[in-house]
Amino acid sequence: MTAMWKGSGAKPPLAARINPRWSDEEIPRNVVADLAMRPRLHPHIITFANEKGGVGKSTLAFHVAVALAHVGQQVVAVDLDRRQRTLERGLTYREGTANNLGIRLPTPQFAVLEQPSTASLFQTINRLGGDADFVILDAAGSDSAIFRRAVALADTLVTPVNASFLDLELLGHLNPVSGVPERAGCFGQTVASLREERLTQEMGPIEWIVVKNRVRSAEKRHISRVDDALERLSIAHDFRIGQGLTERVAFRELFQFGLTHLDLGLIPDMIRPHESSRKEIASLLDDLNLSFDKRVHTSVSNRPAARVLRRTRQDFRAAISNAL
Ligand SMILES: Nc1ncnc2c1ncn2[C@@H]1O[C@H](COP(=O)(O)OP(=O)(O)O)[C@@H](O)[C@H]1O
Ligand SMILES: [Mg+2]
Image (tube, rainbow, N blue to C red; front, side, top):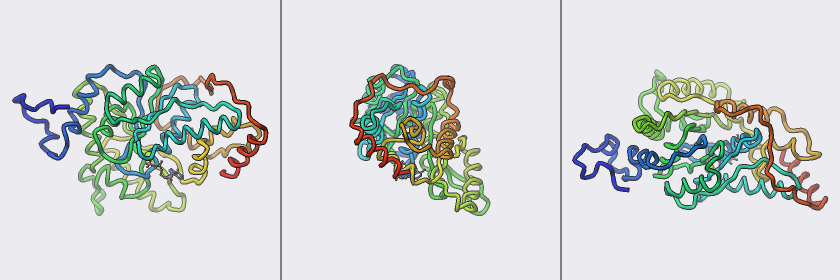
């Protein structure tokens, strides 16, 4: 795409003057203009993004996608990380688990974005379900033109962070002595400029939620300092704070089956789901403050449950129990 201001005689946008290294495709005004000129997407879009890898974007995207499917919402999940494909793999394993257990599991429609272009993103969403209730976008952990589009498309932007000052730096820098926020971090700056452009182009606000992830109870003192810093940053950068998921081995282990603790109750003869983990996932969804009809209960796909050998079912169930 050509920079909109090139040759027009108008002054270049502020972002282009501040950072001449951005390509035309990455300039916030162009990013948002590229989205605004396309037919509007109807589902509520939830983007999981942070410029950092390994903070739990895919883990939280997976849990939120499944939790929404559990309450009867039509969900489309698009994995924007073509290399790691974590969300896509998790949902593929989920289909395999459902088949091997001969049960139905509420599952989003999903795909990997193979071409990192806006046209391909819109086509993928519309192909999977343009009339879905929610679209989940799981971004890769580094800045790019498509990353910025995923952030700028968000009605709800979810940024997972680990309880570490190193992670908070990407949002904003705090003076280590006074604790006063001094400047935006690289991701904080990107979100601020895309939010501003969205408002200029009347695309509505982005609700930003920073969610703590992998919190360990053993680090209470450190966590209360991180909480205090997050609180200050939330005021400076206009985001809400979500409690997220604690550090639990089971969240990792269940991934290989594409399962969450919400699903365990749907598996015949499975041991009782861990109530505290189930509650954590439910509060993660509550913290996002999404509006949907909460009276709708678990609905499953129309696909008939597969016929499976008893032995296969038993082996699968035993492997899942071992993972808990
Ligand atoms: N709440 C959690 N408890 C335990 N492990 C977690 C949790 N959240 C994420 N992980 C693990 O952290 C690693 C990175 O998570 P991932 O979701 O792939 O991050 P990202 O998508 O941001 O790169 C993975 O090994 C994942 O299993
Ligand atoms: Mg990921």
